[in-house]
Image (cartoon, rainbow, N blue to C red; front, side, top):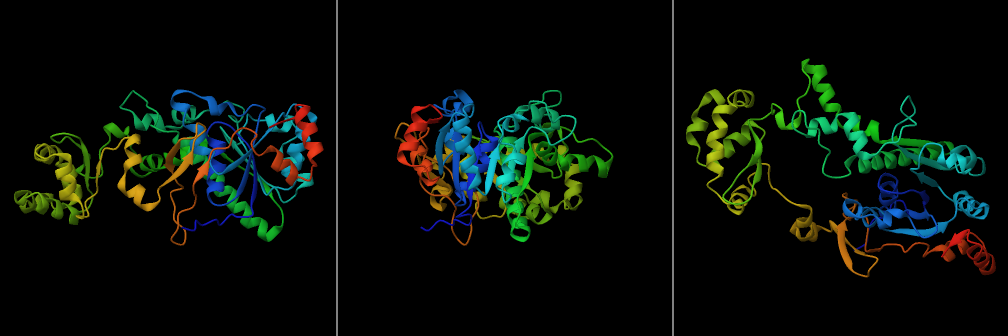
Amino acid sequence: MTHPTPLAGIKVVEFTHMVMGPAVGAILASLGAEVVRVEPIGGDRTRRLLGSGAGYFPMYNRHKASICLDLKNPDGIAVARKLVDRADVVVENYRPGAMDRLGLGYEDLSRSNPRLIYCSEKGFLPGPYENRTALDEVAQMMGGLAYMTGPPGQPLRAGSSVIDVTGGMFGVIAILAAIEERHRTGRGQKVQSSLFETTVYLIGQHMAQKAVTGQAASPMPARISAWAIYDVFETKDDPIFIGVVTDALWEKFCALFGLDDLWADESIRENNARVLQRDRIMPRIRELIRGFTRDELVARLEGSGLPFAPIGRPEDMFDDPHLNASGGLEPVTMPDGSTAHLPALPIEMAGGRPGAAATLPVPGADTRTILGDLGLSEEEAEALIAGGAVGA
């Protein structure tokens, strides 16, 4: 299969760690951009995280090359500057001011490369909070997402690094918009996205609910649903989610499960009436669903047009038949030589899925090749490596 590479020819240099910054480069790389990660000598510490951080590096650093530089060494900085001078895009997610202190801020780099698009991924956009240290969880707590996710009085972070990743996606959107603008102006620019503002954008629907109704949104576990049947139901074995979100689907649901008496009740033919009578309807539905196994329900609901979902776990996705049949997982060679199948970019272009088989870069594995591409001789490259400015 030929994988679409719409960003082929775009050169990206990454000064990133953890998730948000690497997610930007991961998306650009999957779309065909040439992405070089600048890592400290010995490699990015994200590679060695334990527990919930153990998957960060393999998930967000495929399809990239690696060069290790000592950015406290003038020779290391000089190599970084050479890389940037030939780049279209720089991505960084270090603390505010860190890149400026190294002489690698936008103002410095754009003087020699005015076409440069410089993407800063931060905790906050410019304003009173901009110098605070933020993490995904900090933003979720501050921005209202944790409040909406947990039960009342028990704020709960979402079950993945959703703000890091979404903030990275907004960074990609800004980069692509800047590339399009550069086509017209010939000049690059600095773009930013942030954790806090990303969180607020995601909970904007709840802010709008308050604006429309005058009532503050309740946390999702305590919310008044817009639909009467829109919940997780217990079965004989494993739970399942079922949603009935239109009046036509209500008719279909009643027919599918033999609920002739409920369909005959004209007082609940319309959605809002069913919501108001949810306490009467739901016990009957829960009792009905408990009489089936999960697989029996899936077989009955498949093809019906009713929204439903078995409750999946992350490890279940490795064997998901849809993902495996549709190219939703791509093989990645891990540092120990094993192969893992990890999520591909979740889009399709011209009938193809971006991304392909990948090998995670060993720290500095591409150093000599990159130095050669920058015009350095073998002797010059070896002198930089021997002097400790560059790792290989």
